[in-house]
Length: 231
Image 1: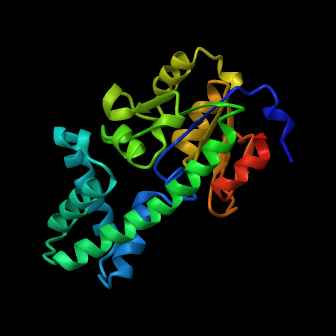
Image 2: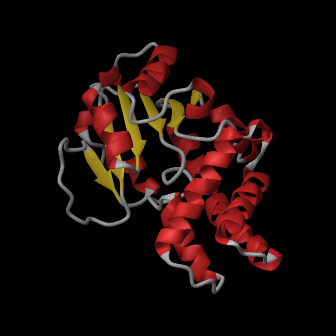
């Protein structure tokens, strides 16, 4: 049933990683699982350090801007393996395949959702990403459904800086209270967008209790639940 608080909303902005490409599973957490799935028993702290090492190198690599999901993830995983001192091409390939298969399934569901809500809302994405968000979205068939795409690496501002949200709002020409933001990160998505006056929907995979500085307008455990809230 449609939530009354969203009655005057005209646009929906989404986060990408952990939101459109999964139901609240953040990339570091996904890699913790993937290393186990391919039978690489590595301490989580080491995986986390390798993930952020690879992330920093990807941000610095200008060639990333043109990469779609699979070539980008091949680079990311290869850099992680280098950081961990691993030399196993079959394991690299398996991790890339598993990561991308999950993302592709989620992005397919997200595309169907966006098509259903597009007649009623203007749509966009605001994401901390590597400069290749448009390439990934085009490959997934999402780019043409969006009116605005803000990639942090392209604009030089990262969430939770409110400036990145203001760029999207400025492009839409809408005041914050007419816009819904959907994201999986309470600190990077919900707090800053809510402080600006946007309506917020928090995507989280479990109802675990957390200290709430700012209560979201709605919480969901899967992306598909959003449709019933807004239509």
